[in-house]
Amino acid sequence: MSKENIVRYSLEQIREKVAKGDDRTDWARVEALTDEDIKSAMRDDPDWAEFMDIDWSKATIVYPTPKKAVSIRLDEDVIAFFKKSGKGYQTRMNAVLRHFMTEQKKSKNG
Image 1 (cartoon, helix red, strand yellow):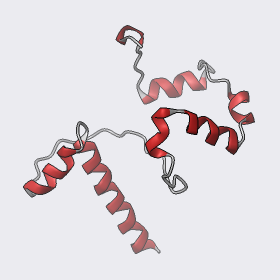
Image 2: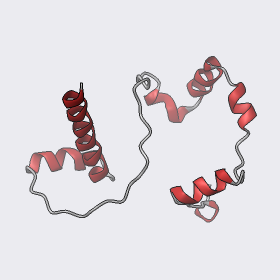
Image 3: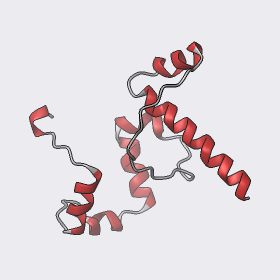
């Protein structure tokens, strides 16, 4: 796919399109899919090969929220660990911190 065909939308723009019914998803076809249909399609998709054995049952949807720039001192090996996995390492660090925060809230409320 060439870059000239790529279109980007904000979350708010997507929500507006869906609310107006201005999306191209065939929801009747999606609703008709069985779990086995979905698993079969995933097995045939090379992009899913490394994700097939992950337990997705506890996955949660996370919508992007505005970020705030901060200065923080971290150990060099922690930064190196996250940077080693490539672009987006700050987002991954944020996800780890969010998970910790969520678990702490659960333990205090539970």
